[in-house]
Image 1 (cartoon, rainbow, N blue to C red):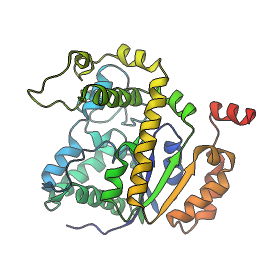
Image 2: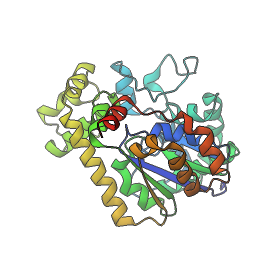
Image 3: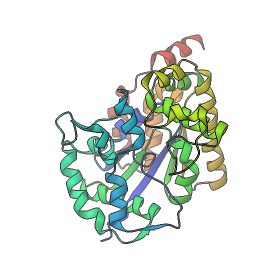
Length: 320
């Protein structure tokens, strides 16, 4: 099977910069499938590795170690939208990662959509992982009757190089926000507390506690960060030092900007959260035109009222 190829775009961002809002507004455009929290959460391996369709579906239907850890310690991220009446509601640590946010944001019956995909995806041909990802997103677009897809994952700046290399024909939206407000927001969010921990551990000790292989030696300083030992208090304590998250912002921004400079994507739109809240109709109109929305003006006018500045952004504007 070979789902039709659709027009597509990827929103690259540090996270905590208004990207979820942007995805939700894009979802209001009837021809566009807004895909959330997919490319950052699914596994990425060497591009030359070939997987069967069955092996690829196994990666999507397996639980995420990161999310399972956050579920275990009671710090479920707000982005998780799996319904309370769903099949895995009583056992979230075993929740297939594709069901955490991606499918619930697309369908009112995410379990039903999951079952449909469980029939179709294992029939994908053996191919590199990146081709599977593209084929999967095209399939979702076809199943939902849309003409294009736009993917957005919080913190995707961290894999910007991989995204640009594997989706060379994608329209790229690079969304930014000032580091002060972004860092403050990250410091209160469990996913970014965990991301910062992993980045710092990899840089300081050469070990990512969530990517330990069997038999690998783990420095004593890292042992309390392992998935089975991490506690909510450890993450909360790390969140009290906002300087850590300013460093994370700098790291993620450098990752994205270097990847963009290297890849020189043919279609690139840079947006700032501050400009979006200052003039929503103009900024959304520019985005709609860039994405190729036939009704870009009507869409921008219709959804602009949903853009409300966050308190920190309003305070900064008042002092400007």
